[in-house]
Length: 253
Image 1 (tube, one colour):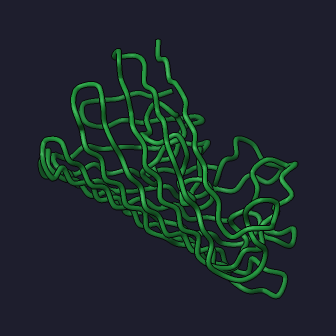
Image 2 (image 1 turned 60 degrees about the horizontal axis):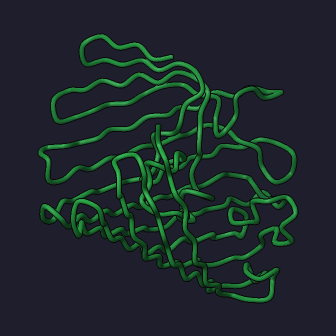
């Protein structure tokens, strides 16, 4: 549920995160695929309460949630979720968001986890848009030897509106899994279980075709490669790079 009074909004329940640039709902993203940062470095949803206050060019967020991607746990744990967005004009904006609390570790316990993201968006011209995201995360005492883990990266997006129906986009990403514990196969049957310590890169190019206001076709080509030690992340552990071509159709009603 969500209620508002003048410039103050209060959201209570299960909702999407305010962290990062890409979002969970497909119609709100340009690309068919997700970045490593969104898939492995950030939470998707929260359960709790969030207060937002618009103060002219600033929007402030603050609330208490049940950590990352959890509605109900055996042991519920409160985390702080907050942020600030600065929008001085229609040309550019800057957003900072953070979550800090405790999450499960690698040895059956819990430990302190904190991550933040910074998103800068610039309308270079009426047709050209550039977006930069930086994300950084850490969890203390995560490993069996008591060691901390870290993950961080930079995403860059460039979009160009060709006409009312066609828009082109490119994404280049560097994501560092410093301890090989964040990136792993999402499907439980995927033989890749992580353990790749190093740098993940990907470059994606795609188009959005909007023949009608409620239909979007999103073709995309993507190249991924990994530079580091440990397990090879692609082709069931046989390769350090992969190519992907994909397409989907979104119909909103």
